[in-house]
Image 1: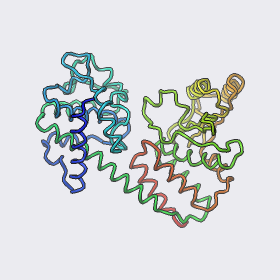
Image 2: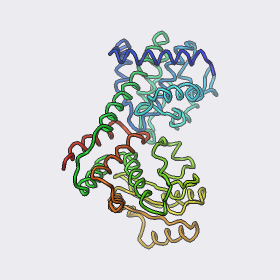
Image 3: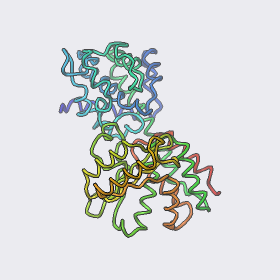
Image 4: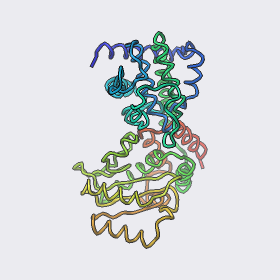
Length: 388
């Protein structure tokens, strides 16, 4: 670890934040073509997150090491360097320390979250336009390669580019904090529990964000745990875990899980937003997780759609699959719509109407990777229903 790098990066972060609070934006001093390209990048959009780490790292590394070609981002190529190592050693700790990753960049690793870049070392160098089209890659590869080359072509203003990118991260942070503060202070006046459930269902159906459903289920199962003796002294975990591709492929228990007082997962929860249903691969994934965590007795599959299962699964085959899971793995796989889960949660007798909405809000604010769009949409809906 180069302490000089660390100190310089910290000074840059302080400068970027203080300047932004004083309404000074470094992007205004960038070359117009680069500024235009950065303006086109949809910062915070899913699938576009990981490459931002590469941009950030390339900018500050070019500033502090101007002779390095930052378009040669692999240590295995001539005159290259491992941008993944530099990102994970410096950039990731920096954005995590100052909490500017939400809706901006990855808190894990840019290369780790982008298979396209990780596997493109055969190119030797990322030139303008040479990443090529790829149906599996959602972000604009030409736009990315142009931004990266712009950074490399302007070593004298690389620090300014880095400051501009940091300010985008701080803008996202400030926006999120503003919405969060409003939601925390808001006390809903909803006086009808059915309207409360209707609000949550409507939000789930209108929000194409699986992390929103994760937050709702975290709130729901949190109340269920307090009401059922089976889950006495248990807690719901997982809502604050980063939802990255690498995380999904890891040996996590599920989107959420219920943990006993001894720290063992005894139930797992998988969720699907309004665009998805459960299918054969989900059953196989559940069985793999149960094998990895034999303490699990219950596995809940929760979908926003009323038809939880894909039409590709026949009823007879489904019954056989679920029976096999119970017989072989000793786990009860239960598929429910979110409406059914909410109906059961109503039986938990929350003390006052509006409390459920506050629980969902609290869960939303601590759920990783919740977008500003999702938080804003939730705020708007809650205020719309207020007093109904």
